[in-house]
Length: 434
Image (cartoon, rainbow, N blue to C red; front, side):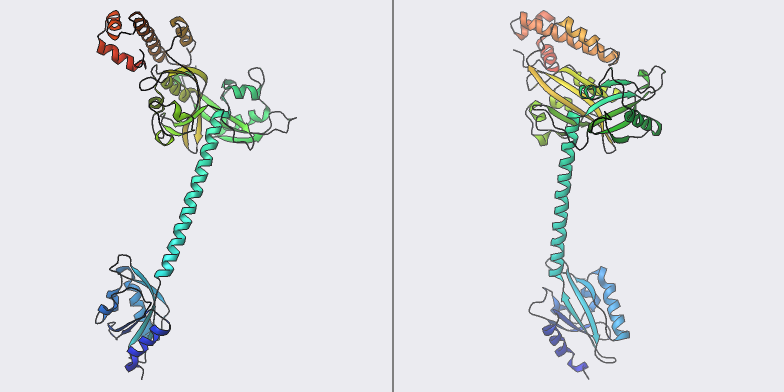
């Protein structure tokens, strides 16, 4: 009885409760289409005479087939969501329910446009993702600040895993634990033995002085020195111990540059002071991923040797080195370094303080004596190379002084040509001399 009124009913459905209504025959072919005034932008008029499944995207055809099967058996269906391709680019999501008009009669499928809801949902997802990105940026910034502050302020010492004797300690550790005369508190020895027995990093919160309310956070991380440095010829286990006041992030001293590199010496993060030391003027964002020796200039290869030493021994207390040269002035700096861990990644933390600018005017005997004092900390090859660099630098500076900074005259005094001397000046960071 209602079969002949299917087009009029479709129009009524659109007017009352839907955006699109389709009249579909027993073969699943669309025979009539009605689109409401506020309906979606669809090429619905071209659907007449086409199977309904051909008007939707390939991934939602199965849902149309299920609607037709369900309406054929039950006469009415629940809603299912499908997508219609759009000439405008993005697919148009629709929600359809179907009703059969009498036994063997046509089917009316009424659809609601879900574009507005999908757009709102996408805006919600975008806003949520933006909030998550901002949150993680904040967390990363906080983690970065904590890590940099720890490099600058942590008490650090290297302990022999077998004897629990302190091998190296920075000034903060010597002050905190009363080294070298003081013995390590029992809770620290327990932490060290735990790290030694498990071979994994261990942490504890304790008191250095049982009578004091001051708590410190301690961590002990096992690492091995090269076999060549162990008396037995086997790799020796060391424990890298870090300590800081509980709940404190630490602060960097005014004018102190702090940088964290990966194990190859490439910058992972740095504080604002670091970029002011870099050659050629660098912004904070230009240092990440760059080799620290290239950024600072390392004419005497002291910084490269220091990085190699900290990888071997775990800690290099404060040491004076000459940096710069090339595109910037040569300057003397105080540098300290220690191994540390950022998650599973091994990295190196360095603190640098600029002392003075100018050529390295230290007398050659005194400079060589300072180098000799590093026996046991550097391999012989590094000691010999640095001694050669020191001798070459002093000889060139003496020749330039005698020649009143005339490059040709200095080259003649040294038995070199001007090109060779210019190359040596650049390598040694003396290119700006005279």
